[in-house]
Image (cartoon, rainbow over all chains, first blue to last red; front, side, top):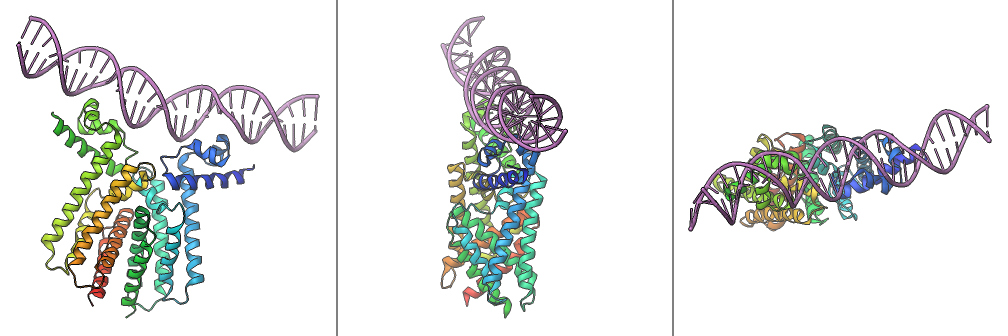
Length: 188
Length: 188
DNA sequence: AGCAAGGGAGAACGGACGTTCTCGACTGGC
DNA sequence: GCCAGTCGAGAACGTCCGTTCTCCCTTGCT
Protein backbone atom coordinates (compact mmCIF):
# COMPACT_ATOMS: atom_id res chain seq x y z
CA UNK A 1 0.00 0.00 0.00
CA UNK A 2 1.56 3.28 -1.06
CA UNK A 3 1.32 6.62 0.61
CA UNK A 4 -1.57 7.93 -1.48
CA UNK A 5 -3.75 4.92 -0.88
CA UNK A 6 -2.95 5.08 2.82
CA UNK A 7 -3.99 8.72 2.86
CA UNK A 8 -7.37 8.08 1.30
CA UNK A 9 -7.99 5.07 3.49
CA UNK A 10 -7.13 7.13 6.53
CA UNK A 11 -9.44 9.93 5.45
CA UNK A 12 -12.21 7.43 4.75
CA UNK A 13 -11.85 5.89 8.19
CA UNK A 14 -11.57 9.29 9.83
CA UNK A 15 -14.72 10.50 8.15
CA UNK A 16 -16.69 7.42 9.11
CA UNK A 17 -15.61 7.40 12.73
CA UNK A 18 -15.30 11.09 13.52
CA UNK A 19 -18.63 11.89 11.94
CA UNK A 20 -20.44 9.04 13.59
CA UNK A 21 -19.07 9.23 17.11
CA UNK A 22 -17.50 12.65 17.47
CA UNK A 23 -13.85 13.54 17.28
CA UNK A 24 -12.70 13.28 20.87
CA UNK A 25 -14.46 9.95 21.28
CA UNK A 26 -12.39 8.32 18.55
CA UNK A 27 -8.77 7.44 19.27
CA UNK A 28 -6.00 7.22 16.74
CA UNK A 29 -5.88 3.48 17.30
CA UNK A 30 -9.38 2.96 15.96
CA UNK A 31 -8.45 5.03 12.90
CA UNK A 32 -5.52 2.66 12.45
CA UNK A 33 -7.71 -0.41 12.88
CA UNK A 34 -10.53 0.76 10.61
CA UNK A 35 -8.18 1.96 7.88
CA UNK A 36 -5.79 -0.96 7.93
CA UNK A 37 -2.93 1.51 7.86
CA UNK A 38 -0.08 1.05 10.31
CA UNK A 39 0.42 3.61 13.03
CA UNK A 40 3.80 4.47 11.61
CA UNK A 41 2.41 5.33 8.23
CA UNK A 42 -0.50 7.14 9.80
CA UNK A 43 1.90 9.56 11.46
CA UNK A 44 3.82 9.90 8.23
CA UNK A 45 0.69 11.00 6.41
CA UNK A 46 -0.70 13.12 9.26
CA UNK A 47 1.82 14.19 11.89
CA UNK A 48 -0.86 14.71 14.51
CA UNK A 49 -4.49 14.01 15.19
CA UNK A 50 -5.35 17.63 14.62
CA UNK A 51 -3.95 17.58 11.08
CA UNK A 52 -5.99 14.47 10.34
CA UNK A 53 -9.12 16.12 11.69
CA UNK A 54 -8.45 19.20 9.62
CA UNK A 55 -7.93 17.15 6.47
CA UNK A 56 -11.09 15.18 7.13
CA UNK A 57 -13.10 18.36 7.50
CA UNK A 58 -11.61 19.96 4.41
CA UNK A 59 -12.34 16.98 2.22
CA UNK A 60 -15.85 16.68 3.58
CA UNK A 61 -16.45 20.36 2.94
CA UNK A 62 -15.44 20.05 -0.69
CA UNK A 63 -17.47 16.92 -1.35
CA UNK A 64 -20.53 18.17 0.51
CA UNK A 65 -20.69 21.44 -1.37
CA UNK A 66 -19.96 19.81 -4.71
CA UNK A 67 -22.76 17.31 -4.16
CA UNK A 68 -25.19 20.07 -3.27
CA UNK A 69 -24.20 22.24 -6.21
CA UNK A 70 -24.46 19.33 -8.64
CA UNK A 71 -27.90 18.41 -7.43
CA UNK A 72 -29.15 21.96 -7.66
CA UNK A 73 -27.62 22.67 -11.04
CA UNK A 74 -29.05 19.51 -12.61
CA UNK A 75 -32.46 19.54 -10.95
CA UNK A 76 -33.41 23.18 -10.81
CA UNK A 77 -35.56 24.11 -13.78
CA UNK A 78 -35.23 27.85 -13.33
CA UNK A 79 -33.35 30.39 -11.29
CA UNK A 80 -36.44 30.82 -9.13
CA UNK A 81 -36.46 27.10 -8.50
CA UNK A 82 -32.81 26.73 -7.53
CA UNK A 83 -33.11 27.88 -3.91
CA UNK A 84 -35.89 25.37 -3.35
CA UNK A 85 -33.88 22.54 -4.86
CA UNK A 86 -31.41 23.06 -2.04
CA UNK A 87 -34.00 21.78 0.39
CA UNK A 88 -34.75 18.72 -1.71
CA UNK A 89 -31.08 17.85 -1.53
CA UNK A 90 -31.19 18.43 2.21
CA UNK A 91 -34.08 16.02 2.57
CA UNK A 92 -32.18 13.29 0.79
CA UNK A 93 -29.17 13.95 3.00
CA UNK A 94 -31.25 13.88 6.19
CA UNK A 95 -32.72 10.53 5.14
CA UNK A 96 -29.34 8.93 4.58
CA UNK A 97 -28.46 6.17 6.98
CA UNK A 98 -26.02 7.42 9.55
CA UNK A 99 -26.98 11.06 9.13
CA UNK A 100 -25.83 12.81 12.27
CA UNK A 101 -26.11 16.47 11.47
CA UNK A 102 -23.58 18.89 10.10
CA UNK A 103 -19.99 17.80 10.68
CA UNK A 104 -18.94 21.43 10.95
CA UNK A 105 -21.52 22.43 13.51
CA UNK A 106 -20.65 19.33 15.50
CA UNK A 107 -16.91 19.82 15.39
CA UNK A 108 -17.29 23.50 16.15
CA UNK A 109 -19.29 22.75 19.26
CA UNK A 110 -16.82 20.11 20.32
CA UNK A 111 -13.50 21.77 19.48
CA UNK A 112 -14.23 25.31 18.37
CA UNK A 113 -13.15 26.76 21.69
CA UNK A 114 -10.05 24.56 21.89
CA UNK A 115 -8.69 24.30 18.38
CA UNK A 116 -8.43 27.46 16.29
CA UNK A 117 -7.61 25.39 13.20
CA UNK A 118 -10.80 23.37 13.45
CA UNK A 119 -12.82 26.51 14.15
CA UNK A 120 -11.29 28.06 11.04
CA UNK A 121 -12.26 25.19 8.76
CA UNK A 122 -15.76 25.21 10.22
CA UNK A 123 -16.19 28.92 9.60
CA UNK A 124 -14.78 28.57 6.11
CA UNK A 125 -17.39 25.94 5.34
CA UNK A 126 -20.23 28.15 6.47
CA UNK A 127 -18.81 31.14 4.59
CA UNK A 128 -18.59 29.05 1.44
CA UNK A 129 -22.15 27.88 1.86
CA UNK A 130 -23.33 31.44 2.36
CA UNK A 131 -21.45 32.52 -0.75
CA UNK A 132 -23.06 29.70 -2.70
CA UNK A 133 -26.54 30.71 -1.62
CA UNK A 134 -25.79 34.32 -2.44
CA UNK A 135 -24.85 33.16 -5.89
CA UNK A 136 -28.26 31.57 -6.24
CA UNK A 137 -30.18 34.61 -5.04
CA UNK A 138 -28.08 37.00 -7.09
CA UNK A 139 -29.70 35.49 -10.18
CA UNK A 140 -33.13 36.51 -8.98
CA UNK A 141 -34.98 39.76 -9.46
CA UNK A 142 -35.24 40.64 -5.79
CA UNK A 143 -34.50 43.83 -3.90
CA UNK A 144 -31.89 42.44 -1.52
CA UNK A 145 -30.50 39.12 -2.70
CA UNK A 146 -27.90 38.92 0.06
CA UNK A 147 -30.52 39.30 2.76
CA UNK A 148 -32.62 36.59 1.13
CA UNK A 149 -29.59 34.30 0.95
CA UNK A 150 -28.89 34.84 4.64
CA UNK A 151 -32.47 33.95 5.44
CA UNK A 152 -32.18 30.78 3.38
CA UNK A 153 -28.92 29.95 5.15
CA UNK A 154 -30.71 30.29 8.46
CA UNK A 155 -33.32 27.81 7.29
CA UNK A 156 -30.67 25.39 6.04
CA UNK A 157 -28.80 25.41 9.33
CA UNK A 158 -31.94 25.20 11.39
CA UNK A 159 -33.33 22.30 9.39
CA UNK A 160 -30.04 20.44 9.68
CA UNK A 161 -29.90 20.82 13.44
CA UNK A 162 -33.53 19.81 13.90
CA UNK A 163 -33.23 16.81 11.61
CA UNK A 164 -30.12 15.67 13.44
CA UNK A 165 -31.64 15.88 16.89
CA UNK A 166 -35.10 14.59 16.05
CA UNK A 167 -34.01 12.05 13.45
CA UNK A 168 -36.87 13.25 11.29
CA UNK A 169 -35.94 14.22 7.70
CA UNK A 170 -39.19 16.14 7.31
CA UNK A 171 -37.44 19.12 8.86
CA UNK A 172 -36.38 19.71 5.26
CA UNK A 173 -40.02 20.01 4.18
CA UNK A 174 -40.73 22.55 6.91
CA UNK A 175 -37.74 24.59 5.83
CA UNK A 176 -38.65 24.30 2.17
CA UNK A 177 -42.15 25.58 2.83
CA UNK A 178 -40.69 28.53 4.69
CA UNK A 179 -38.22 29.14 1.89
CA UNK A 180 -41.05 29.13 -0.62
CA UNK A 181 -42.87 31.81 1.35
CA UNK A 182 -39.75 33.95 1.71
CA UNK A 183 -38.95 33.56 -1.96
CA UNK A 184 -42.45 34.50 -3.05
CA UNK A 185 -42.41 37.54 -0.81
CA UNK A 186 -39.04 38.66 -2.15
CA UNK A 187 -40.08 38.19 -5.77
CA UNK A 188 -43.11 40.45 -5.32
CA UNK B 1 -20.17 24.53 53.26
CA UNK B 2 -23.21 22.27 53.28
CA UNK B 3 -24.42 19.92 50.65
CA UNK B 4 -26.87 22.29 48.99
CA UNK B 5 -24.37 25.08 48.63
CA UNK B 6 -21.84 22.61 47.23
CA UNK B 7 -24.41 21.45 44.69
CA UNK B 8 -25.13 24.93 43.36
CA UNK B 9 -21.45 25.84 43.30
CA UNK B 10 -20.74 22.67 41.37
CA UNK B 11 -23.53 23.38 38.91
CA UNK B 12 -22.31 26.95 38.51
CA UNK B 13 -18.77 25.81 37.80
CA UNK B 14 -20.01 23.05 35.51
CA UNK B 15 -22.11 25.47 33.52
CA UNK B 16 -19.30 27.98 33.14
CA UNK B 17 -16.69 25.45 32.11
CA UNK B 18 -18.72 22.95 30.11
CA UNK B 19 -20.47 25.64 28.14
CA UNK B 20 -17.31 27.59 27.44
CA UNK B 21 -14.92 24.80 26.54
CA UNK B 22 -17.03 21.77 25.79
CA UNK B 23 -17.74 18.83 28.05
CA UNK B 24 -14.98 16.41 27.19
CA UNK B 25 -12.38 19.16 27.35
CA UNK B 26 -13.14 19.88 31.00
CA UNK B 27 -11.95 17.44 33.63
CA UNK B 28 -13.54 16.84 36.99
CA UNK B 29 -10.49 18.39 38.62
CA UNK B 30 -11.14 21.78 37.07
CA UNK B 31 -14.76 21.57 38.27
CA UNK B 32 -13.37 20.96 41.74
CA UNK B 33 -10.93 23.85 41.46
CA UNK B 34 -13.43 26.34 40.03
CA UNK B 35 -16.17 25.41 42.48
CA UNK B 36 -14.02 25.20 45.59
CA UNK B 37 -15.77 21.95 46.46
CA UNK B 38 -13.63 19.00 47.46
CA UNK B 39 -13.50 15.97 45.22
CA UNK B 40 -15.06 13.84 47.93
CA UNK B 41 -18.09 16.09 48.21
CA UNK B 42 -18.29 16.41 44.46
CA UNK B 43 -18.79 12.68 44.12
CA UNK B 44 -21.29 12.73 46.97
CA UNK B 45 -23.42 15.27 45.11
CA UNK B 46 -22.91 13.75 41.66
CA UNK B 47 -21.76 10.14 41.59
CA UNK B 48 -20.29 10.47 38.10
CA UNK B 49 -19.38 13.04 35.52
CA UNK B 50 -22.36 12.06 33.42
CA UNK B 51 -24.82 12.84 36.22
CA UNK B 52 -23.18 16.24 36.68
CA UNK B 53 -23.44 16.91 32.97
CA UNK B 54 -27.06 15.88 32.96
CA UNK B 55 -27.87 18.11 35.93
CA UNK B 56 -26.06 21.02 34.31
CA UNK B 57 -28.08 20.61 31.14
CA UNK B 58 -31.37 20.26 32.96
CA UNK B 59 -30.83 23.38 35.01
CA UNK B 60 -29.73 25.33 31.97
CA UNK B 61 -32.79 24.17 30.07
CA UNK B 62 -35.13 25.41 32.77
CA UNK B 63 -33.43 28.76 33.19
CA UNK B 64 -33.05 29.35 29.47
CA UNK B 65 -36.69 28.71 28.71
CA UNK B 66 -37.91 30.68 31.70
CA UNK B 67 -35.81 33.66 30.65
CA UNK B 68 -37.16 33.49 27.11
CA UNK B 69 -40.77 33.13 28.24
CA UNK B 70 -40.45 36.00 30.70
CA UNK B 71 -39.01 38.30 28.09
CA UNK B 72 -41.69 37.45 25.57
CA UNK B 73 -44.58 37.70 28.02
CA UNK B 74 -43.48 41.10 29.32
CA UNK B 75 -42.39 42.67 26.04
CA UNK B 76 -44.87 41.38 23.52
CA UNK B 77 -47.69 43.85 23.04
CA UNK B 78 -49.98 41.47 21.21
CA UNK B 79 -50.28 37.83 20.28
CA UNK B 80 -49.11 38.72 16.78
CA UNK B 81 -46.04 40.34 18.28
CA UNK B 82 -45.02 37.49 20.56
CA UNK B 83 -43.26 35.32 17.97
CA UNK B 84 -41.15 38.30 16.93
CA UNK B 85 -40.20 39.10 20.51
CA UNK B 86 -38.51 35.70 20.60
CA UNK B 87 -35.93 37.00 18.16
CA UNK B 88 -35.29 40.12 20.18
CA UNK B 89 -34.49 37.93 23.14
CA UNK B 90 -32.22 35.86 20.89
CA UNK B 91 -30.33 38.95 19.84
CA UNK B 92 -29.65 39.91 23.42
CA UNK B 93 -28.48 36.38 24.12
CA UNK B 94 -26.20 36.30 21.09
CA UNK B 95 -24.63 39.58 22.20
CA UNK B 96 -23.83 38.31 25.68
CA UNK B 97 -20.16 37.94 26.44
CA UNK B 98 -19.15 34.33 26.29
CA UNK B 99 -22.04 33.32 24.04
CA UNK B 100 -21.00 30.07 22.41
CA UNK B 101 -24.15 28.76 20.80
CA UNK B 102 -26.79 26.41 22.12
CA UNK B 103 -25.55 24.18 24.91
CA UNK B 104 -27.88 21.42 23.75
CA UNK B 105 -26.83 21.48 20.13
CA UNK B 106 -23.21 21.49 21.27
CA UNK B 107 -23.56 18.66 23.74
CA UNK B 108 -25.60 16.66 21.28
CA UNK B 109 -22.90 16.94 18.66
CA UNK B 110 -20.25 16.02 21.17
CA UNK B 111 -21.94 13.27 23.16
CA UNK B 112 -25.24 12.49 21.43
CA UNK B 113 -23.87 9.36 19.85
CA UNK B 114 -22.12 8.21 23.02
CA UNK B 115 -24.43 9.11 25.89
CA UNK B 116 -28.13 8.35 25.58
CA UNK B 117 -28.86 10.35 28.72
CA UNK B 118 -27.31 13.50 27.32
CA UNK B 119 -29.06 12.95 24.01
CA UNK B 120 -32.33 12.60 25.88
CA UNK B 121 -31.96 15.89 27.74
CA UNK B 122 -31.01 17.61 24.52
CA UNK B 123 -34.06 16.31 22.70
CA UNK B 124 -36.28 17.19 25.62
CA UNK B 125 -35.03 20.76 25.46
CA UNK B 126 -35.83 21.05 21.79
CA UNK B 127 -39.23 19.45 22.26
CA UNK B 128 -40.02 21.91 25.04
CA UNK B 129 -38.95 24.82 22.87
CA UNK B 130 -41.11 23.57 20.02
CA UNK B 131 -44.05 23.22 22.40
CA UNK B 132 -43.50 26.76 23.62
CA UNK B 133 -43.50 28.15 20.10
CA UNK B 134 -46.60 26.17 19.28
CA UNK B 135 -48.22 27.80 22.25
CA UNK B 136 -47.43 31.19 20.78
CA UNK B 137 -48.74 30.37 17.32
CA UNK B 138 -51.83 28.66 18.67
CA UNK B 139 -53.01 32.09 19.81
CA UNK B 140 -52.92 33.39 16.26
CA UNK B 141 -55.56 33.25 13.60
CA UNK B 142 -53.59 31.17 11.14
CA UNK B 143 -54.47 28.09 9.14
CA UNK B 144 -51.74 25.80 10.49
CA UNK B 145 -50.23 27.11 13.71
CA UNK B 146 -48.07 24.03 14.27
CA UNK B 147 -46.48 24.35 10.86
CA UNK B 148 -45.77 28.01 11.51
CA UNK B 149 -44.24 27.15 14.88
CA UNK B 150 -41.99 24.58 13.26
CA UNK B 151 -40.85 27.16 10.73
CA UNK B 152 -40.09 29.58 13.53
CA UNK B 153 -38.19 26.87 15.38
CA UNK B 154 -36.10 26.33 12.27
CA UNK B 155 -35.25 30.02 12.23
CA UNK B 156 -34.39 30.02 15.92
CA UNK B 157 -32.03 27.09 15.59
CA UNK B 158 -30.47 28.39 12.42
CA UNK B 159 -29.87 31.84 13.86
CA UNK B 160 -28.30 30.35 16.97
CA UNK B 161 -25.89 28.21 14.99
CA UNK B 162 -24.93 31.05 12.68
CA UNK B 163 -24.44 33.51 15.51
CA UNK B 164 -22.28 31.01 17.37
CA UNK B 165 -19.99 30.28 14.45
CA UNK B 166 -19.76 33.77 13.03
CA UNK B 167 -19.81 35.59 16.36
CA UNK B 168 -22.24 38.05 14.82
CA UNK B 169 -25.44 38.67 16.81
CA UNK B 170 -27.13 40.14 13.76
CA UNK B 171 -28.11 36.62 12.77
CA UNK B 172 -31.06 37.35 15.04
CA UNK B 173 -32.10 40.26 12.84
CA UNK B 174 -31.95 38.12 9.73
CA UNK B 175 -34.11 35.51 11.39
CA UNK B 176 -36.52 38.10 12.72
CA UNK B 177 -37.01 39.56 9.27
CA UNK B 178 -37.74 36.10 7.92
CA UNK B 179 -40.12 35.43 10.79
CA UNK B 180 -41.94 38.67 10.05
CA UNK B 181 -42.46 37.58 6.45
CA UNK B 182 -43.66 34.12 7.43
CA UNK B 183 -45.99 35.55 10.04
CA UNK B 184 -47.48 38.07 7.64
CA UNK B 185 -48.02 35.36 5.06
CA UNK B 186 -49.71 33.07 7.58
CA UNK B 187 -51.96 35.82 8.88
CA UNK B 188 -53.28 36.54 5.40
C1' DA C 1 -11.44 14.49 77.82
C1' DG C 2 -12.71 11.02 74.58
C1' DC C 3 -14.86 9.34 70.75
C1' DA C 4 -17.41 8.84 66.45
C1' DA C 5 -18.64 11.00 62.25
C1' DG C 6 -17.72 13.76 58.63
C1' DG C 7 -14.96 16.76 55.80
C1' DG C 8 -10.86 18.56 53.10
C1' DA C 9 -6.54 18.02 50.61
C1' DG C 10 -4.37 15.49 47.77
C1' DA C 11 -2.15 11.00 46.66
C1' DA C 12 -3.13 6.88 44.26
C1' DC C 13 -5.19 3.76 40.92
C1' DG C 14 -6.65 2.04 36.55
C1' DG C 15 -7.49 2.86 32.08
C1' DA C 16 -7.40 5.50 27.79
C1' DC C 17 -5.04 8.06 24.47
C1' DG C 18 -1.56 10.55 21.47
C1' DT C 19 2.81 9.68 20.04
C1' DT C 20 7.29 7.34 19.55
C1' DC C 21 10.33 3.37 19.62
C1' DT C 22 11.81 -1.45 18.80
C1' DC C 23 12.29 -5.29 16.18
C1' DG C 24 11.88 -8.44 12.73
C1' DA C 25 10.57 -9.02 7.83
C1' DC C 26 10.63 -7.62 3.25
C1' DT C 27 12.28 -5.14 -1.07
C1' DG C 28 15.20 -3.35 -4.63
C1' DG C 29 19.80 -2.35 -6.24
C1' DC C 30 24.59 -3.88 -6.69
C1' DG D 1 24.27 -12.67 -1.40
C1' DC D 2 24.29 -8.42 0.87
C1' DC D 3 23.22 -4.02 2.28
C1' DA D 4 20.27 0.08 2.97
C1' DG D 5 16.04 1.50 3.36
C1' DT D 6 11.27 0.80 4.30
C1' DC D 7 7.43 -1.17 6.37
C1' DG D 8 4.04 -3.42 9.68
C1' DA D 9 2.94 -5.03 14.22
C1' DG D 10 2.81 -3.90 18.42
C1' DA D 11 5.18 -2.63 22.74
C1' DA D 12 6.33 1.32 25.28
C1' DC D 13 6.12 6.01 27.16
C1' DG D 14 4.18 9.95 29.16
C1' DT D 15 0.21 12.27 30.09
C1' DC D 16 -4.44 12.98 31.30
C1' DC D 17 -8.68 11.82 33.45
C1' DG D 18 -12.51 9.68 36.16
C1' DT D 19 -12.81 7.74 40.39
C1' DT D 20 -11.41 6.03 44.96
C1' DC D 21 -8.57 5.92 49.01
C1' DT D 22 -5.64 7.69 52.80
C1' DC D 23 -4.67 10.62 56.28
C1' DC D 24 -5.38 14.21 59.22
C1' DC D 25 -8.24 17.77 61.14
C1' DT D 26 -12.45 19.53 62.87
C1' DT D 27 -16.82 19.24 65.23
C1' DG D 28 -20.38 17.88 68.15
C1' DC D 29 -21.94 14.80 71.59
C1' DT D 30 -21.43 12.36 76.13
